[in-house]
Length: 162
Picture 1 (cartoon, rainbow, N blue to C red):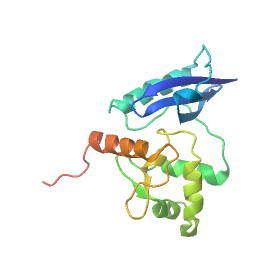
Picture 2 (cartoon, rainbow, N blue to C red):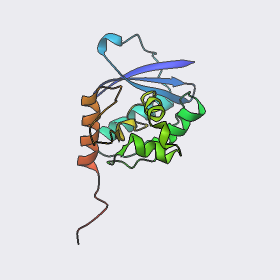
Picture 3 (tube, helix red, strand yellow):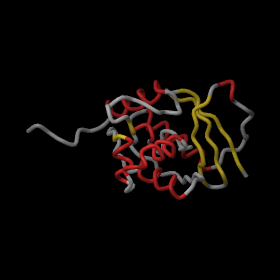
Picture 4 (cartoon, helix red, strand yellow):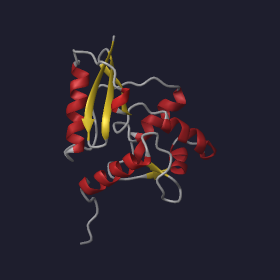
């Protein structure tokens, strides 16, 4: 049984879908998109909301609630690779295609990246253009910029000068 709840965040309203014991989607939506949500949010949805709040408060850098999104083997491969991008860091679409073993698949990687249904959680916002510009974000570029700045401002430096 699918459950839908809505959660207000610093980057707008989030629509959270669960299928049984897994979160299957965290999507940006407008208030006009809101449909009546289920009255009973399951444990996965409540854990998702708590972890999203911790992320937005700068207290969490990764998510570990039960999640599963449907997609092809290639999409799953891309989404799993996105999870390996460290908090506060970015890679290019070309680098993403290299990491999955096919530099000619840059566009396909971009398409799979854009089909990610777990916004914020599977960090597709950490992939940028080869020229360093913010490109290609289905959640609108202002959100991508906000998320990247949020992570940059809350990440612990891993290198020291001395």
